[in-house]
Image (cartoon, rainbow, N blue to C red; front, top):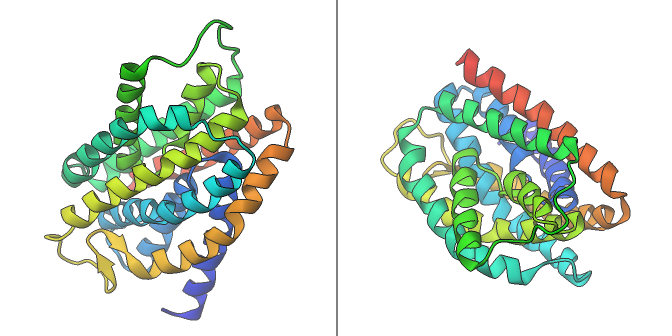
Length: 269
């Protein structure tokens, strides 16, 4: 790995780790566009670059999730009752996406899918609609289904699920700081289940670059994960210090920018 690439990946890891702790998005919303660019710039075919970026991004979430959730847990912000009901559905939905649908879809379609859902999530967050005061989280069955949907969508776009789980929990009157913290915890089962699927699905793929494990690019994973775990706790600390409206605006602005970039990549390829 050349020095420039090492520096680029380290900076990317530092930024995504902080944002993972700040917004509960696992960093995937940031990593996928930038990793797609870095891989494509080094001669990887665009279709394959998108898939490798998604898989590698998801693998880093295993580490950033553990780091950020630890910081949130110390503040008592994680709703473990919600996590326990979401987790089984998350695992099932993640495996369906990463083992089946991910392999069948073209990289350009995955990029457009990423753009649409991220843009939708940004709009929901920016509108700042007040949920009905009486609305609560659904029962165990409803949370299992919600977890399955979030796990499935995350598997297609390489994100920790915060783009869907945070707005959903806020819609159900969960405080945003609790929603961000709980979303960070959900990132771990989402990432672990999806990475297993990406590795298995990528075993028969040709033209993978050196250092690949299925669709996961191990050199990029090592550098990004190492840098991101250092800054995720700082992001979590900042999340509890920022006003709620400011946090929502930051979330929405970042998601809009990345949605636009991935829409461009999907249409251009």
